[in-house]
Length: 329
Image (cartoon, rainbow, N blue to C red):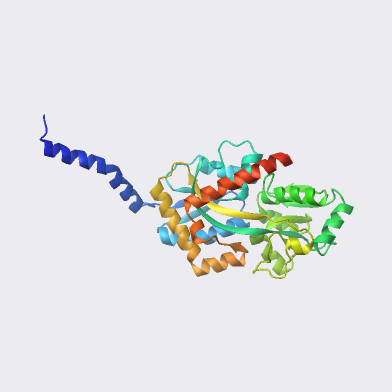
C-alpha cells in the first residue's frame, strides 16, 4: 500500500522523535526501584560512613532507597569488580576512592579498567591522612616515631586494607622517605584495623582522617601528624607533617561515585543532581567536615570534572607506583 506523502512524513517524524521521547520518559521514571551502592570495604570504616551520610540525603532527592552493600577484600578490587560487571541501568553504583580507582590499576592485574569501565558521576570529598599509633607505643611525636622505628627495624606492624590501599601505599613511601622498616598487616577494611590499633594488636596506621580523628579526639590512639599543608579545622591540635619534621610529605585521599560503563547520560545527570544537592546541604557539609572531609567546589562536582581528575591522577601515580615496584601480595 502506498502512503500519502503527508502521512509518510508524519510517521517518519514520529519515528525520529521516539529515542528522544524514550530518554525523557526514562529520566522521569528513574529510579523506579531501590538503588544498590557498593562500598568496597568492610562496614564501619570511613568510606562506609561517608557513603551512608551522602546516600541518606541522595535518596530524598531521588525518591528511592539507596541500599549500601559492603563488599570488602583485596584492597577494594572485589567490590569494584562486581559493579564493573553489573547492568548499566543506574541501579548499581560504586562509592570509590583514590586507591580503588587509581592505585589498584597499577598494582593489580584486574578484570576491569579503573577508568574506562565506569561512568563518573561526581567527586565527593577529599581528606588528609593521619599518622596514628597505639597508645602504648613509646614515641609521642613524629620525630620520635621515626627514631623509634629506625631503632626497632621490622618490629612494628602497620594496619592496611591490603596491597594498594591508602595505608599500604603511604606506608611504603613513608619507609622510603625515612629509611625505616616495619611489617604490614592486611585487613578487610580500615574499621577492623582501627579496632585492632585501639586494642593494641598492631602498632600504627596511615589512616584516613574520617576514620582516625574520632579515635584521636577520644584519646584511644596517638595522633602524630596530618599529611596536609595546613592544619585541619576539625583537628587544630594535630600538627602538619611540615611542622612535625617531615616537610613535603603531602598526600590526600579523594572519593567519588561511579556507575558501570554505558549507563545512560540522563541517568548519570539525575544521580549527579542528587549528589550536588547533598553536598550543598548544610547538615551534610557539617557532618563531612567533622570527619575531616573537604568538599570540592561546585564546578568540580560534575561527571566531566571527576573523569578528568581521575585521569590526571592515574597519569601522576601509575609511574610512581611502578617505579617503587609496589605489587599485590
